[in-house]
Image (cartoon, rainbow, N blue to C red; front, top):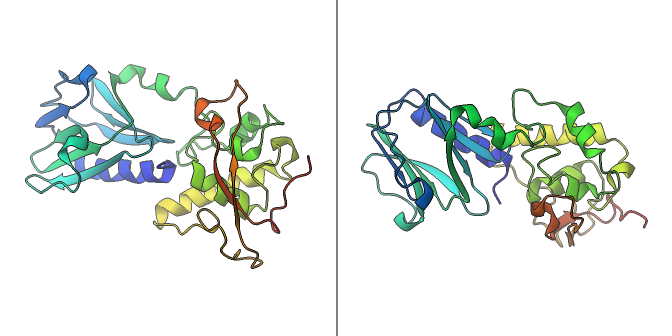
Length: 260
């Protein structure tokens, strides 16, 4: 699943292509918004919050979420698309470019004044200008018995982390992902690590994982073979997204399994 850095970079590309430009065509290929016409509208701004992306005009905000397979691409007018046309969910055109959203998991058109309702429940955006580490720690501490690997995926705690970065953050802090939040030695340091590596990922992409996807390969700190396992949570109070078991990667020596 694309994570906060991917969405942030997609927003940056779209901002460069669309911000301040007048739309000459809009094509929403989802039934609910098939009649929406943004021709002659000026794109005020493009931004992201966690894994959510917004293309804003004076009247409306086009909200998209990539989910598992979505992506945004920018093409010069007349340029051949690099993905199948049947996968396109939104096309926004100017005199010069076409911005195409393929296989988007969520597409919404909301009033500009109502955009906040989409993100109000989320924790602080790791890549946002108002990033607040103390707020992220406070949110994580609400459920001290939850595993840190699950808590990091819950966007209500902090926005932007997916399965790749939760393994990376825990590896860098030498914390096993199954460790209870209340037992993490320095939660603020872990949260700051999350901010650091996502910021690094958007400054110098692509970032090569140190743990994720490296099962059976040597740990770059101690040489021990890294391990892959599953981690999820079935507690009903947690977000459905984090209830499913997903792969975690860790070093059994640097990140020992916590005592029961």
